[in-house]
Amino acid sequence: MTADIGGDSRPPRETRGQYFPELQGIRALAVLAVITIHSAFASGQIGYGDQPGNGWLAVVIERFTRESLPILFALSGFLLYLPFARRTIEGTPQEYNLGSYAWRRALRIFPAYWLLALVALFTPLFLMGQEQVGHGFWYIVRVLSMQHVYEAGGIPGGMESTWSMATEIAFYILLPVFAWLFHRLAAGAATPQAKARRIMVPIFVIVLIGYAFNAWSHHPSLGPYPVQGNWPIGWFGYLAIGMALATLSAAAQSGGWLAPYRLIARYPGRTWLVALGVIILYCFSPMGDQGTSNFPPTEIVLFNQPIDLLIVFLLLAPLTVPDLRSRFLTGVLTLRPLQYIGRVSYAMFLWHIPSIYIWNLWGSTNFPLALLLVHGTAFVAAVISYYAVEKPALRLRNKLGKGSVKPSTPVIVG
Image (cartoon, rainbow, N blue to C red; front, top):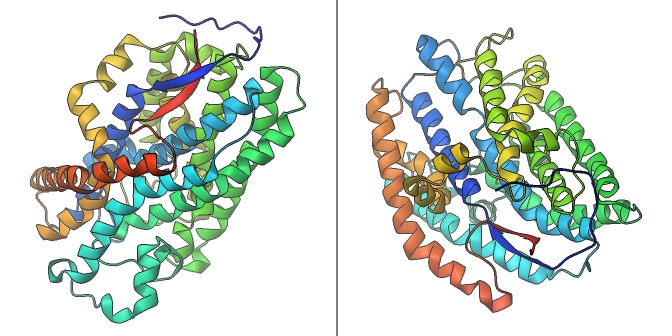
């Protein structure tokens, strides 16, 4: 299927929902990469502190999986902002049911998360020698509300990876505000291209703010792994990448193609090849931090983050072009196993750290075994969580507004 990648604008048209199976596929790959890098860390394959990693294997694992969580953030930015971007660029009415939006977001993330939190907090198997319950009522409230990232030592054992949920929550709350401000800024522009360009300005400012915050939060004076390093503002740059792609995609759907999005539309497969080339070059970083999981100081963050942002953009951009798909990328990302893993990927993300504890893999040197056990256990737990908790919760979406259980976004009909 081809797309008109000219520059002519078109009048507003009726919209409908479109399912992007490629995004489900890359979500699955990103979660599998998260589990892989944490399994590698647990089994000593990646360097940490004075402990060296396993040579080139450490470099390859770390460089080829480091964008996994940023991709998940960018997907949230794209999928959730696109309906707002479409309204602004198409000029359709801006009414939006915020109650329904909040209800759907809560049903999507809290039930599965609460299941993990209750098990981690109150089941002896997951107490990991820590007295979480002994921290008191407000400690438990912070964990259950995903605010545990703001207090040093506030993340329970087995839930270490859930610090990222605070970033998601912050984005869910701020997104309607961002969308309103972007709309006010862009509404006066005459064409889809002009509106998109105006929206891109504050999105770029968000990237810069996150970049500056990371420069501060990674300053050596704060010590290794300071609590500020997990705060949402430092990760909003990746969410902004998703919002930028939503803006480009919405403008293109209206005939307002912006460069380099037009070029990506013509060469989607080659865009991934460029991303692969950047990742390979990244393996030879002059900063010397590749293959490690150490908390990077300011100078390394300032060097690395623009590259990370670029890689995430290159990987996701071809999957967001309206009415155009690469046969190769679609063929790979729509494989049934990947689609199914994408469906249960959220719970896999939640349960992969407890899986490491279950098998007592911290300090293990058998990376292949760790990889197999953690992926397998997390998958089984995710399937149980999906059918027992997540899927029933998703059926409740109709209570305050119908929402798709698939990653769909509004596109022009016809």
